[in-house]
Amino acid sequence: MRRGAERATFWAGQTLKGTVVTDAVCARPVATIMMMVFFSGLALDIAVPATVLTAMASLKWLVESWPAANDLSFDQKAETA
Image 1: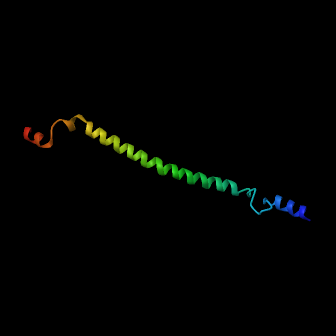
Image 2: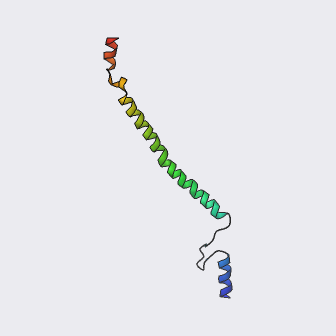
């Protein structure tokens, strides 16, 4: 009797303690897709702000090191014009 019950729970995908060993046919791909979406969202949560901050820092450096920005101050340009 116990062997029959063990066989039935094994084929149902459960161990003797009741935890599931194997998932249904459609549950694994759904879980995999959900994990892919979650972790790609985490990756984008890091990558997008890092890219934006890099672009902002690069533009700030470009504006500060542009030759026209270092020539004269605004007041001096107005006096010479």
